[in-house]
Amino acid sequence: MPQDPRLDPEMAAFTTMMEGRAANFPPQRLERPLDASRAANDALNMTLFNPEPRVAESTDRWLGVRGRRILCRLHRPSTGGPLPVLIYLHGGGWVWNSVDTHDTLMRRYATGSGAAVIGPDYALSPEAAFPQALEEMAGVVRWVAAKGAEWGLDGTRIVLGGDSAGANLALGAALLLRQSDPGLRLSGLLLNYGVFDDRMATPSYAEFAEGYGLTREKMRFYWDCYTPDPTDRMSPYAAPARADLRGLPPCLIHIAELDVLADENRAMAVALRQAGVAVEEGTFPGTVHGFLRAADHVSAARRAVDSAAAWLRRVTER
Image (cartoon, rainbow, N blue to C red; front, top):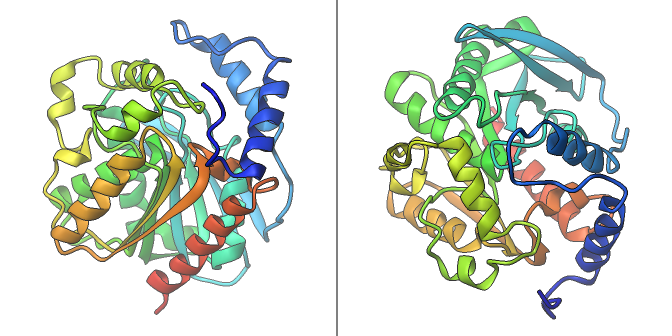
């Protein structure tokens, strides 16, 4: 599609840079098996890896959840404790990415907020369709709440967050925990340009159907991978736009302006407020889906990280 004049100049330069880098890798194909496309996707994203900022501890730990060993990357910004914790779920359409592709972003949140950050490497679709990843993430939260002190964490100060499909899993897990573990109180939800509605019928879906990056065709493929049985999309745990949102913790919603998901994020902010949930909302003009990965190149991404870090400090303060 022609370049939108609203596109932030730094965002435009970043998009052009990544298109050039992508030419050095095999194309990402929306077809199964996904192994080759996953390898190319991850390799491209890892060209953005930055060892800075450094934290006091970055280690890989393992948790047994629902009969599966889940790798959890733990970033601790300081050796003190017990620290509040952000459990951050990477995006990628439930299909791509890992704790490696989001490692730098998680460390940015840790150093900016003073909270520890855990990145769980949840099971990907279509091999592990709904609700496996959702139930795994609820299990990780339960473990941190009950035993997080073993890792120097404060199990009473947990924020659950994520971007794109990770934000979907974060909100879905919060809804599931509200039902299954009413005594477990989250401190907040950090929702970055999340997937909340399977219907794909908003004006932003029509406007940005062919780009940038995230298209309607890709979103249809991702939903088919995550919920191959279309009836599962009626579940509020899969499509939180269908949920009763009452009783959720404070939420921060960050929205990319030029994104097929922009309108469903705005609608989610409205629905949360109508349900009595405290919501802070920010739209970043001229940005596209996934812009947080561009923090080394796009000032809007750095502002978003700084804003989220300040919010994390507020919602986890004693």
